[in-house]
Image 1 (cartoon, rainbow, N blue to C red):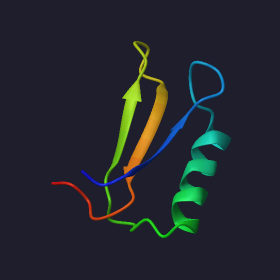
Image 2 (cartoon, helix red, strand yellow):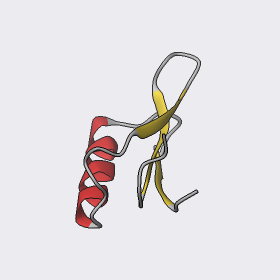
Image 3 (tube, rainbow, N blue to C red):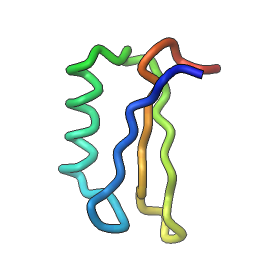
Image 4 (cartoon, rainbow, N blue to C red):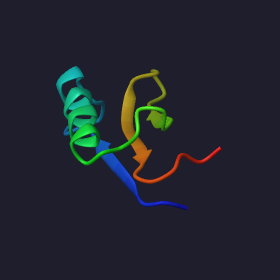
Length: 59
C-alpha cells in the first residue's frame, strides 16, 4: 500500500478551511487528481478525517 497524506480536523469535525488545506497540500506534493479520497465520518455524517494515497491509486 502506498504512503498516504492524512488530515484530521482540529476539533472533532473538519471545517471547510481544513478540507481546503488538505486539497492544497495534496496538490502541492503532486498527488494525482484521479486518486480517490477516503474519509472517516462521525455518527452525524460530518467529516472527521480524510486521506489520499501519495502514489498510484488503489482499486
